[in-house]
Length: 390
Image (cartoon, rainbow, N blue to C red; front, top):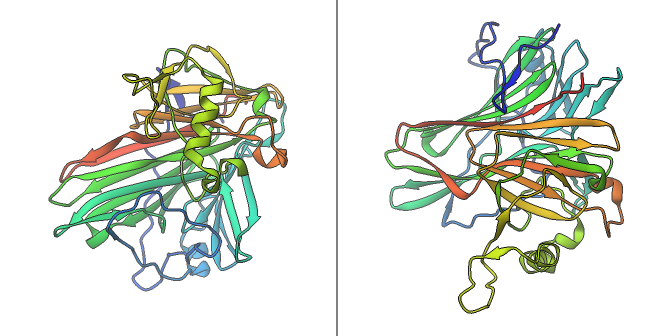
């Protein structure tokens, strides 16, 4: 059966409603998953005086299987954590880890009849022998609020499974929730798997008496045969700013882009070599400060991604396409609610462990300008990966 999702005016529109009834939450059985901190190296990008934390409860796999059975979702314990697997009859499969909300896999049917993995995830050993998982689709947001006279920084990363709708025949929707300090900030993270696409939507509500400021991105690592064989189509005439690769516990970047080697300085030096004609924000005295952004206008209709780039696009279309000539497939990346698009390529040169970095990272972002929520406001934004290869 063909999916009812469609792209209209360059925007991927997922199904807005699923008629399956909402599950009721019993008062005694928890549906929280245990922490994922032992598996992830965490790097905080924002330094603020006060950091809020939200507690979570241990996992109950028996409850999850019993309460949400029959929706096309199965649960598995992995090292004391929770892996939720969504699977449709047409072969589309998505796997998410809880409570982090990291989507580690999206397998989609292709025109040739096979099933192909579209996300790139790497597992390595951490400093203390723990497993470090990077890549996939991740949320990387920081919310600034006020608590009395103090400024509070909150990065939501402990998600609670709240509801599952749909079925394996058409589409599956998994809803996660997260509450901020004093439960005055409400967040929903809705992941929708359809026959021809995967959607990740974030909804934020502000019950504070003062505005909220949110910065960050939804980051997606798309696996490719090689960056050299991959092209971005549809970004021409968009303005862009060259920025160092985003700091996130999930982003996967080559070793020579590490902070220990001077991330910002090395990055801007390489960008000036690749794009000698870029404009800068400080041209009055001929000098170039370390904190300025380089900017330009995208002129390539068929942009090859063989060079290492890290660009934030503004005034970009709501969707564009990545074409991988090596794997002979493509994926359309759409956004809603966000004003900025992020494009990162590790490049094809000078990488020793090449298979680990055979990906292109795309993102929907609020980095150059924060998203501001007034009191009692609700904001929605998301990313949609459309598979046109059926």
